[in-house]
Length: 248
Length: 306
Image 1: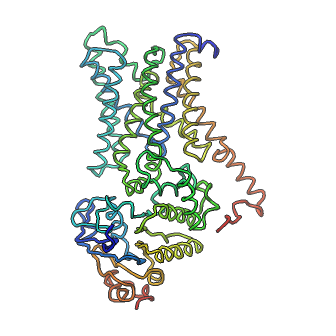
Image 2 (image 1 turned 45 degrees about the vertical axis):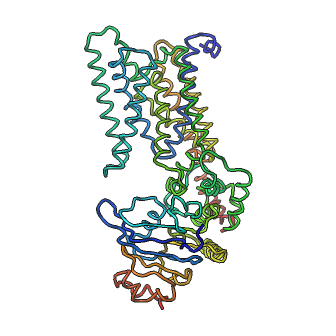
Image 3 (image 1 turned 60 degrees about the vertical axis):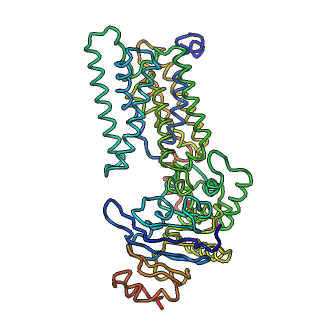
């Protein structure tokens, strides 16, 4: 592993649905060890940026590198938390089993999780204060608990870089605090976290790095210097004066 | 007719064994179709198999089951790829793509069967048995073929159980881990085509979809665990197969395929109504209980840890 290489470096990325561009000529370079937020209005392409990064959708142009490698090679170093609403929570399985899925990438094809993997998955559930719910059918968990199960699954991936799609959406206060302390724990362990986030109030409080996106990359850098009223209003088309109390 | 007859009489035994093998294989594989919300897939693919049977006969002039079923399998598989391409390359949604493939392939199949019937070819009689199945024609080698095909399909499923589970629950996460969900999906669908091929002689193309969906829907009502759901679904499929055989061969001239489907329907109905956690009857009872004991409503208790 090239330790100098940035956890995520995107160059000239363009992504289109049919013939409509959703991301246009994106350049983004996220340094190691930050908690980064991707912020922008609805339809800005925030989730698309995450999905394109993970190879989940075709890109029209550009390059994406993680730790100086393509995603196919850097896969083992990257953890992913999809939007909670992207799966059917009535699926017949329990919380521990979902977390175990985080170990599948390192297991590879055909090989089954071992007892050690199950213990590791349980440990990951403990990290999000969900160990008591390990055997609980996932449809019987609250929305916040489901979100924490998804976070535990990403932890089980033992990654260096975590990509999270709206982890704070629709969660209760307990879960929100659990996620924040987990993110801070990850940062102090030297990991890099990139979250799609759409709450302007909490963004400067939770994150220390920000990318402001609206189809194009408006601005990206440390929260202190990047979170300015000019940048935010440029991202949101100048219609959100009352939403940017936290701006420097 | 008794259970003893079922296992002592040669014809009955073959029919019952064939129906049981079909029930196990389609019950287990059908779970994944249901969990991936592709209940219609089995219907489309079994209808798509019909032209394959007709073309196989036209090309070879043979009515050997292995030849016809190979044709059915190939046609079902072409149907799979066609659905995949339509969804990927056009803006047509999956349910519409299934509908298109179902009706076009089935229409072509009926057309070819009519053409074959009009050729005044004495040998052709009986091809239409694949429409509704004719379990009584099953012989020992058919049952053996069904068992080998079904065993291979289930072996594949056991090997890739972890991958198929992940694909069914969270295909995007599967893709992010590098498990190629498109190819896994095509493989899973191909296994379902195998199950359909196994069922064509017994229940036919029209009723086959029920063998894939019915046991899975019933099994889901009784358990919250995928592994248990797969086993239960296989058991329900087998039970419907054996019960249908006994009911049809006990009376005079009642067709086996439809009796298997009716037995299965009974299992589904009982499961939907009476399964402990999800049964509609218990849900109603709990509801009225909750209304009568308003202050001690269990739903209102906070979930531990929240």
